[in-house]
Image (cartoon, rainbow, N blue to C red; front, top):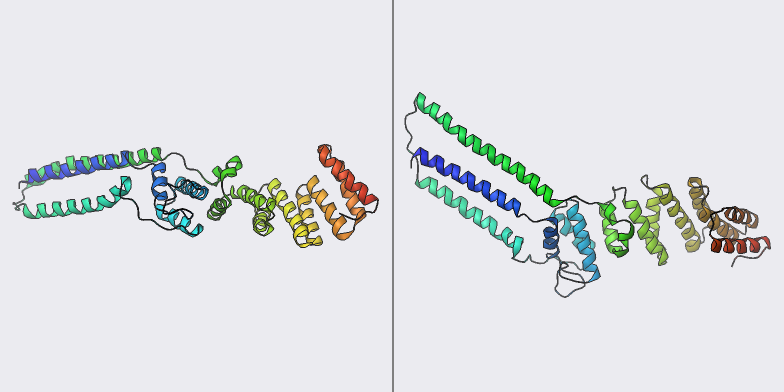
Amino acid sequence: MSERLRNVVTIGLLVVMATVLVVLVATSPTDTDRVQAIGERIKCPVCQGESIANSPSPMARDMMGLVAERVADGGSDEAIVDELLASYSGAVLLDPPARGWTLLLWIAPLVALGAGAGVILWWRRHPVEPAPVTASDEVTGRRRLVPLLVLVGAFAGIVVVAGFFLQERAGPATGAADLAGEELDDVSNETMEAVIAANLDDPEVDGMRLALAERYYQAGDYRSAFPHYLEVAESDDATESQAVAALIRLGWMAWDGNAEVDAAVGLFDQALAIDAGSATARYLKAQVLWCGAAAYEQAAGLFEAVLSDPELPEESRDLVEADLAAVNSGASCT
């Protein structure tokens, strides 16, 4: 085999490699493809042999939502799968279906191995006899290197362009902030717990904690609500309104759940130190002082302070006026 033919074969191989790379990148799976592929690997915990990608159950939908969140955040497939298996009891790993991109993943290593073995055997069977090297040969060799270097540089350029193309296809990433506000209405407690656990350093997680804690609170589950309210109250990233809301809930749970007057009053005072005009903190503190400590005079003063708020809703004003009249008459808390 001549040196010229060997160079032609080498250049041809590089062209083929570059072409394959472009094709793979141009048809590479999007985030949506990855979410679907990962979902097909996880068995739905509440279904009969179905993957979470194919199950209509609310839990499966929640799990797929978490997968989409993790993919958008740039998580690896294995890390996402591990998190799902750890977060959802009953979820197990299914064998990946041999179709689509999964089929390519199964076949590609075998094809690459076969191609590599074929190239090695071909080179071994077609050796080039060494020839005496002259000065002109050295010059010619250098000239031959030029197109090869140009081709290698072009190949590297294709890699860079392909990388930009792939990044463009991926679209903008999202974080914990995307599971905030109204969207949380469609997210289960289990999914919110998993998202919070995986985003502890994200400032947006305080809003999610507060929303989840409020769900537990409204359901009367003080045990589950308490740690989330406490984290928000102690967070350096929480806004003043978030901290006040958390402290108020903690104060009322201390009283309503454990009849701890001093602890409840202390928490209400912390809330008032942040927002001195909080009508809710004043009212609940008055309730605890009246019902738990029989401190009628202090309770009356706080009720009056609440009534001085011009923005107090009428229905709330009627309730506070009734409580103030009862305190002034010396009636017991009911």
